[in-house]
Structures are given as C-alpha cells and as structure tokens.
Length: 194
Image (tube, rainbow, N blue to C red; front, side, top):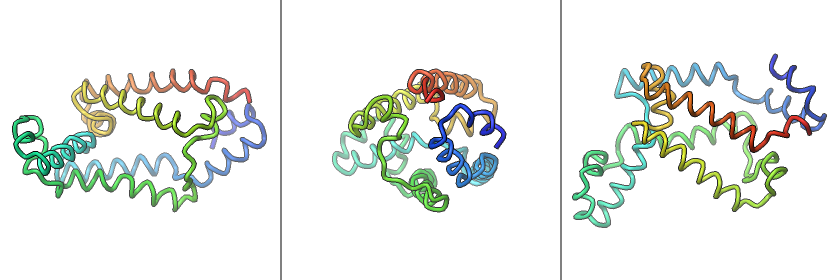
C-alpha cells in the first residue's frame, strides 16, 4: 500500500475512497504473478509455453473449414495453425478459460460491473459506449498486430517469451510498457489534478 500513500494525497476525497476500497478488494499483485508463474511452469512441463492469439486463427480456420472446406484447405497457414480442424485442444480451452476466470475473479473480489465506460474515460471523452468500444477495438488490434508482427502474441511475449529471455519478447515488452505509459499520460494526463 506504500504507492497509495504517495498517490492518494493528489486525489480528491471521493476518488481516494474508491481507490482505497478497490485496492482492498483486489487480488494482490504478487499473488497474480505467482499464479501466472505456476500456470506457465505447468504449461511448459505438460504441453507448451502459453500463447493466446494463435487460437483466433485456429477458430477462424475451423469455422472456415466447416463452411468452405475447399477454401480453408488452400491456405497453408490455416492448415498448419488449425491442425486437424478441431477446437478440442489445450490451447483453445486455455483461451476459453480466460474470460471465465476473469468473471469469477470479478465476482470473488466484488468488482463485477456492467459499466462499459470507465469514469476516467467518460470525464475526458464523454460517456458514449460506442466511442469507447471502437477505440478499445482499435487499440487491441494495434497491440495484437504488433505482437504478431514480432513473432508471437501479447501473452506469449510477455509471459512465455520474457521468461525464456527471448530478444523479440524483451523488445516487445519494453515497447509495450513505454507506449502504455505515454498513451495513459496522453489520455488521462490530468487525472491526478482532479
């Protein structure tokens, strides 16, 4: 909680109470890191390093193969990614478990919400959900494009690649942190002054 003692004096009392309440209910950062580390060790020992974005290609390939088998079979990338044209794989169940786990964690920490537009975003850009969803999609697309361009996916680079000291993963992760800080300062630069 030491970071909170430095940040809280800059924030108004209503927001300060929300931050303290949220921090008290959140899963500690070290527990999340330990959990991810254990999952990574288990995944590497049993199957392969963690990766997520390839499963979108697998899903596309399986669906395309179901609708247009001849077209899907002509794509060497889809054939190799969707090996066997099935979703019954460890990787796909891992990816399907991500939103389920996030939902259960939000219930366990009493942080579940159906709000589409965070207060900080609404304060800066308005409360239109459509605008928020469009920009979230664009940001996610750029992030995923950069990760795939770097030879992996966000989770593959940030979790599996960094743990193996892969150069492309270290570069991607550093660039991600720098761009996230710059973007947050640009989007919410006045947050601490309110």
